[in-house]
Image (tube, rainbow, N blue to C red; front, side, top):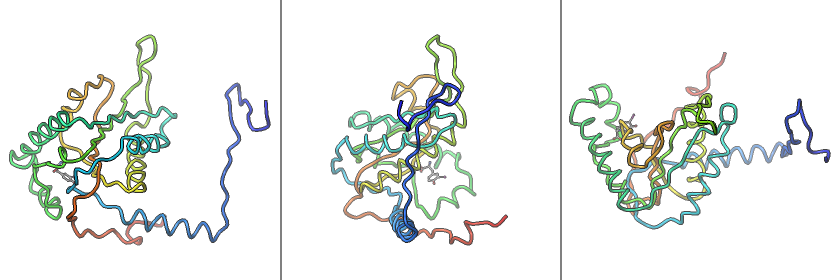
Length: 229
Ligand code: IYR
């Protein structure tokens, strides 16, 4: 056994190779990462330009580096590229959203909150995009004997993984929308997922349309984001 591995109460540990950086390089990297992330926007006008599946898989692999409760990694990323399935997702999502928008499931307060986004029940981008990734949370695992294995902080874990997923896509030059067609139960059936999984969010992924408009939203200033104890 080398110096870089040891057992702690019988459990394997490895030495962590932390990458220490000079102070000026830390500031430079902090600034440039902020600038890059600040250019990210959620979009709804997508092009049908193809995207290699390998890029989607790399973004999923990156997302899967997320921290998770007890390292249970309670997420599944379902990659949908088949046009028929995308159409089925669009149709089912629009059916639910039509009830939201026109059937009264969105109350006045909510409607007012959505007004600046100008969203409607129509979701054509679900057919336009080359890929839809549907993220499922694994509510509990299944042991080899069929019994349930508890997962911890599932929503927190999957939420963090989705954040890293969005950042990875943006970093590689792809655009997405964090979308939660509501209710999402239809995705379990459509994608044949087991009972221990629940849909968490859906990400249409591709390039923006030649003309793509987004709401002129303002990010909160730091003074409204940071609070002192
Ligand atoms: N799910 C609907 C409504 C909607 C809700 C929120 I909160 C948004 O940030 C955006 C939309 C839809 O997708 O249109």
